Length: 521
Image (cartoon, rainbow, N blue to C red; front, side, top):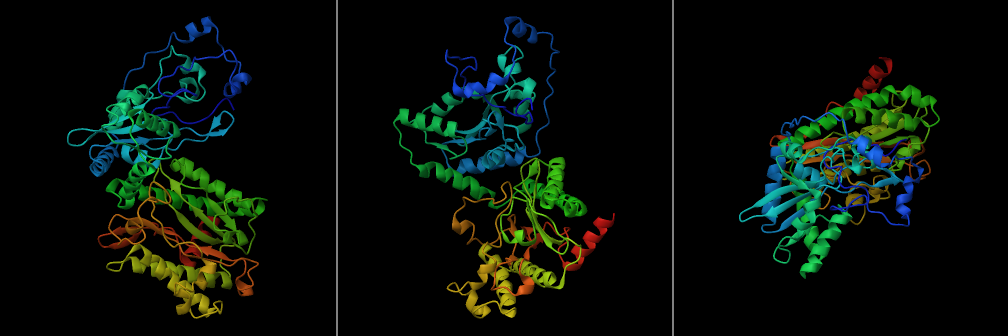
C-alpha cells in the first residue's frame, strides 16, 4: 500500500499536521515522533527534483460543474436554521480525517449536519467548515476549505494525505461555489472570520464535530472575554437534529434510492448462500456480498452489517460475522446501503438457509410479521404518536408469548409498565427515525421524537423481533436458538404510512419463493 487511499473532492483540507495556514515545511532539528512515519519513504527532496516536477504540466481548462440537485434544498435548510438563531454566528464543521492505523486513515464521512446544510456527501470535504454569518436580516453562508494546491508546492507531490499525486485533484473555490451555490473561501481565512466582532456576536459551533474547530471557537471566546457554556452549542446541535424529523422531497427521493439499492444487496446475499454454507466463516461471505453491492451503487454501507446465523441472531448487534452458516438454520441480515448523498436504508430480513422455513421457525417468524403489520396499522391511525407504533407491536408479541406459555402472567399484565415480562425476548425499541444517519434526529427533544404525533415527511423503521437464545430455559425447546427480526422503512404521507421497502419480500411464502428464484437462477 503506497499511502492512505481515499477519493478526491471538496477541500482535502489542510496539510497533515497543520491547520489554518501553517506551512507544512516547518521543521525542527529533532525529528518529531509523529513525523517519523515518513522514515520508511524514499521521497525525493533535491532542489533539482522540486524544480523539475513543477514544470511541463498541461494547463487545466476550468469546467464548472452543474448546480447540485441538493443545492436548493440545502439553501432552504440553511435559511431555516438561521431563523432559529438570529444574529448568531453558526459554525458547522465537516470534521477531520481519522487515523485508522499509523499513517493510514479511515474513509472520510462528513458530519451529518454539515452534509445536510451543504448538500455535499461521500468522502469529499475533510476539514471544511460551513459558517452562517449573521447579516442585518438573515445569514450569509460561507464554505471554508483548502482548494487545489499549485503544482509548484511541496504539498502537490509530497503529502500522502492531501497531495494531488497521492489522492487526486481537489476542486477550486469556483468549482465548489458552482456546485453548492455557497460562497467559498480559503480555510486559511477561517480563524479571522470566526473572530470577527467576537464579544458582540454569539458564536455557536456544532459540538464534537471537529476538535480543532471547537478549540478555535473556544480560543476566540476566551480572548474576547465571553463565556459560553455547553448549552450554547448543544442548542445548535439539537436544532440541527430536529430539522431532519420532517424530510423534504430531495431526502425522500434519496431514501427511495437507498432502499432500492439495498434490495439489490439482499438479492446478492441470497445468491451467495451456497458459497456461505461451504465457507468456514459463511457469515462473512454474506456480509461481503452486500458490501460489494453497497460500494458499487452508493457510498458504502450505512452501518456495520449484521449477518447472524443460528444462535448469533440472538445477539442484537452481532457484527463479528465470523460464524458458519448451516443448513436448517435461519440467518438474520440487518443491512442498508448508504447512497452518495449519505442517506441510508435500514432493512432486516430473516432468511432460512435451506430456502424453506421449518415449522417452529415459521411460527416465530409469523408472530414477528404480525407485530410488524399491527405497528404499521397503528401508524396509520388518526393522531397516532411515535410511541404508539412500538405499543402496537408489543401487544402482538405479548399475546403470542402468552399463547406459547412463556409468560408468568397474562399478556395484559405483562404490558403494564410495572410488568414488561415479554421484553425479555425483545429488549430493543420497535422504531427509530431514519435518514442521513441510521439513527437519525438522535439529539431531538423527547416531545418532538418519542411523544410526537406522526406527520407527513417522517421516515422511520418498524422492526420488532423475537430472540430465543439457545441457553434460555424459559423458552420452549423447539424455539431455542431461533432469532427473528423483520425491519422495514416507513414514510408517513398525507394518505397514511407507506412501506418504502414493500418490494423486498417479507411474508413466509414470498420469502421462500424469492429465495427459490434466486438460488436457481
